[in-house]
Amino acid sequence: MSLRALLVGGLCSGGLLVLVLVSACVGRLALPAGQVLQALLAPQATGGGAEMVHTILFGARLPRIGGAVCVGAALSVAGAAYQAVFRNPLVSPGLLGVLAGAGTGAALGIVWNLGHGGVVGLSFLGGLVAVGVGVGIAQVFDATSMMMLVFGGLISSALFTALLSLLKYVADPQNQLPDIVFWLLGSLTQVTPGALGVLAGPVAAGIVLLSACGRMLDGLAMGDEEARTLGIPVVALRYGVIGGATVLAALTVSVAGMIGWVGLVVPHVARLLVGPCNMRVLPVSACIGAMFLLACDDLARTLSAEEIPVGLIADLLGVVVFMAVLPLLRRGWRA
Image (cartoon, rainbow, N blue to C red):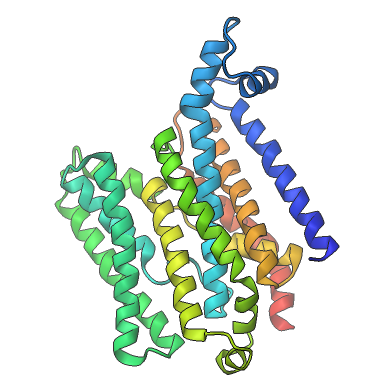
């Protein structure tokens, strides 16, 4: 690994740690950094308001910070993996319908009054089913065609978007429809210590596995025939990476709702910093994505008296960041 990549990785890791500490301090009830550090280093301490700080940190704020880190990292790595597989810089995790499918599953859980656990489970299942439909359509017509895979994803997205609209139409406008709309806007308010424990393991495993495929993804970028001459199992790699990235994206949507732009923008920023090598892009994307969504959540919690859905903040900042890096990206595309 180059010195530049090591430097960028170290700066990103340090920046993430600093941002985690800042995020633990900010909120409707601001906490002094000294008290936060004391609570983190000595969680059993009592007296002097330590109990209140402990309750705020470990009961609500730290799980939410962990959720933002996991969701941001997972979406960014999923986006980078999709872009590598499809050899298209404008691909995002929603290409094959995972976002529409997960949204449909969550809306179905809300309409059926299944509670939070049922909504999360159906959302995750819906994302996987939507991608399965897209891949199945591609298999029926031409299993080897990347274009048919894209078409299958477009059809699946359109289908599940229509089903989502139908569920919004039949939902109770007083009790269910507001919940569906708020969930679709994206929020980290539902991340509990238990939910974070379930989310963190699969996300970490997915990021590690996809990052381990980085060198083969670099070979895939040269084209299928060239990749086969290098001994890369093209079809198995393509569908394996798509499957791993889909699971990551479906997990994030089931926990935090619809959060866009992260998976599209962050990989571009990572490539500008460390170059096109996917072995470096994927882990750096994870770190930058975690920082990006954590910063968005800090803004969502502090900009107004009423919390703003983090998905809205991510969309707005994502557009700004993309417009800022677009001149640099255009140079690379010309080259």
